[in-house]
Length: 159
Image 1 (cartoon, rainbow, N blue to C red):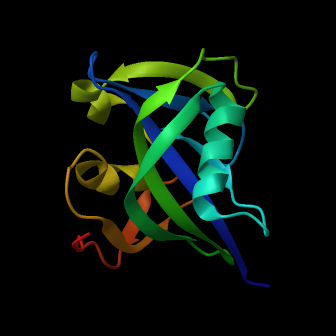
Image 2: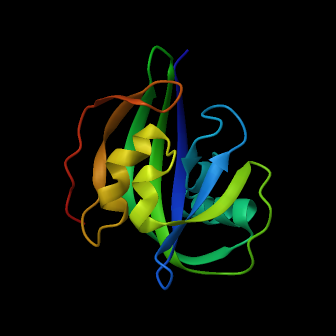
């Protein structure tokens, strides 16, 4: 049976320190790999509200605004699972970071982000995540470790 999951991921950016908050996953899928914070959107939930909830649940931080950077359909190779993933950034947040039960939170210098053990399908999104214009829109086929097998479309669209 085919399964489509709607979800989100947000990269919280500290512009003063030029750092991004990342999560190193404790659990499968993609245990040990790094991404932003986020998760599944509940059936009755607005997509942006879902992202704000996930940010708070995983970090203890309250984001006052989020910016859409990508809409990506991810397809897990040789499986019947696909995500429709909304990718956001926020540099407008407050609060104190708490311990996350889903992974280790840490601040990473943006300049050295490529050297981080990122989930593979996040890498093609990095230019859009840290750009002031355009939204990445496409489909990425990946293996169970997040390694990109194929990028079907990666043309940025105007906002």
